[in-house]
Image (tube, rainbow, N blue to C red):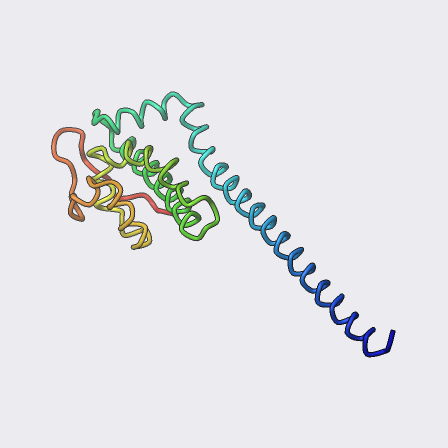
Length: 176
């Protein structure tokens, strides 16, 4: 075998080595992406768990949310607590929406897991009033997506509040 033939053979072997290396890097990137997505999903779950555990573990909080969503009479301090709850669940929803939009969690994660609860809370008269007063605290693209998914939110002009006894809406809680 001549030196030229050995050089050609080395080039072919080198090309196969480069291809194998690229395939290996591709597999590693895919695995890393899946791990990152799992970590993001776990992070979103942990953030939501704090709210769920509060509702599960404290009957007063569950009663407050139920009364607020059903339109029951609330004292001003309870209305403030309800607004803070609306703010927390909406901020969490925005984080999941952003993760889904950026491919960090499955694209349908927001629709499957978040919108049903948001419809229950924010679709109520108090939720609509809170949203009308507080939506400017959220990203405009998220506001548009949420109003498209929950038509009641888009129907209420900014600064409105429900009418009737016990329906006063306190200033919106901080979104962060």
